[in-house]
Image (cartoon, rainbow, N blue to C red; front, side, top):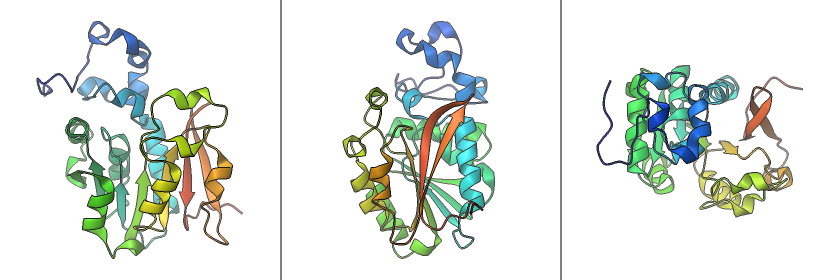
Length: 238
């Protein structure tokens, strides 16, 4: 089992005694977050708040693979974090290419290592840097081929304090900023947002004559987050 770097920013907690006291609830959820956690998954402390739990990541990946237009052959994960979603996309086998962007070098190291554990490290192109500038440099003129998935930072865990979360308060990128920047690169966008997001704000970005699909993703009957689908996704629903 490969040991993490000795800089103290990346961790491989394999016993409860090693785990930070303030984060103990995540220790008990570790194998719901990563099915292969005990095989040596690497995490940063912030990743416990940010990573998509594996069952939800797998379900989202399946929904996108099944519903995206067939001409879409490139999947871009704009905010890859420690790799939860990118790994799920690569395991689908649907995409000619999966690209994962992450500007935090520690999170990116974790993501690459975790992808090795799941056997898909060779199926993902990893890129360090700001997703907006990197996507612009690499994918200008390929809009017709791309599905773009974005699980942006939400600005901490305080979003759960509101009955309805104001998406203009997301930090450091609010909904308007995300949509205006990322819609330049693809007409097929999927945003992973807080479960209590304001749907009225979301519908303002529906293209004229088009629907926006929103789906809640749950574990044990409790919604953990919501995905919003912009574009010609076909879910087979009337």
